[in-house]
Length: 74
Length: 467
Image 1 (tube, rainbow over the protein chains, first blue to last red):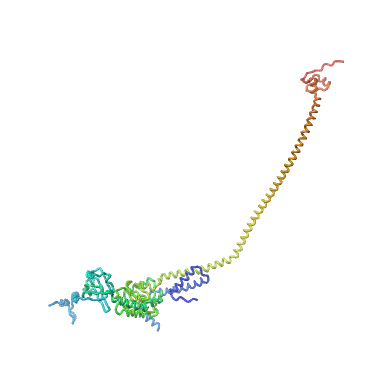
Image 2: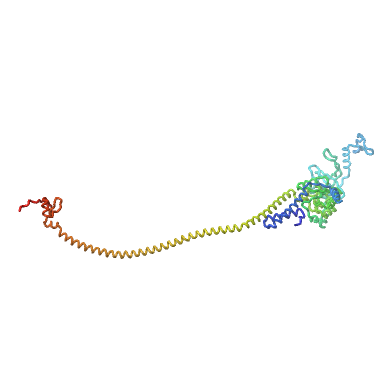
């Protein structure tokens, strides 16, 4: 099991590499299946990242955020 | 006795407040103030021009500033034209010497009252002090490598939490939100509100930035405000603020002023943007709507490729499993074909042999026929010779026979009655022409004819004489 992507942009970059490789048709069956599995994981991760910034705009004042974080710490 | 314009007519007004003269009508008070201010001595002042506005009206407006303060200035356009300066000469940051005096505009139905330093004459005084100080500071920070630190930080393309330092009210806040909306980004914004123009601005902005960075969950910080003169934006050229930004571990995006304004924070920040909207797009590099569509397409392509890879190989395996049977079938077909070709070839060979035999037989027969013909011809020759001999023999025989016949004919002719007739003999013939060979026959016939060599003669038996 490969390590998860560090960032959204690295996930997308790797995803583009995978699709490019698959599009060449040169990958063998084992490699193709591995790439597909990795690609699905990356899509799931990327979709999760997009969902995280798509639920609704939340506006906080700096003091509010600090209070929230301090409350969570207590 | 002189009349004070500030207090004239006070007796006709309602009661005022103890300890203060008046109340006076404010318009009259303003007019009096203007007169007093105009009495101030006219002087020359030195400062940097900023906020220069060449409007459609009769005045040119600008501010004169230095590090300790400033004056709002107005100059009649005619006076400006007489100064020999062009509009390009009087630009923000230019240090000028202005001659004039205090004035006060009392305002009107739609115009606000304001104090101005009425400039009568104007000349350039060299490089602006503010800009010169700014350039010196910029060079020093650059030499310390502080312009590069922020630019080396990894900047997330899709931050979940963005810190924003700006004024609580103003167009910059609204424009920044509009930019995020265009990106389809709906994460968390942490507002670090701070004054962006007054003397306290630089320190407040630096504290807000440090607090946002200290929270730990803010991935990008945006510092923004609208446009203004270099003096208005001076807080963003503060050395302490710029050093704070340069050393911050969180990437800072600056969007201060408009594209023509270049403050020092623009140099030290990770990214410098011309507008708050641009800053929003830089903070969220990903167009979320397009990214979702792209992910959907990527998922479809990956599924398609994966399925195709498996199916292609399954089809190939299936073809492998069919291969032996297909090979046998192919060989069988091949054999059948060869068998057909062999039969056809045999038929063609038999025909050829028959033709050969036929030609051989024909040739043999021909030779036999020719031999036979030759033999026949030879026999014919012999036969002809024999025939000729035979003919000659026949001719000789015939000649001999003719001779014999002639001899016989001569002999016969010698016995021919006709010959006797020629010699005078007669032949008695009855009425039928039959010869009467005896005297008795003649007697019996009585009447008869005598045939002579030259004709017939009737004759009759006479009465026999008695003896």
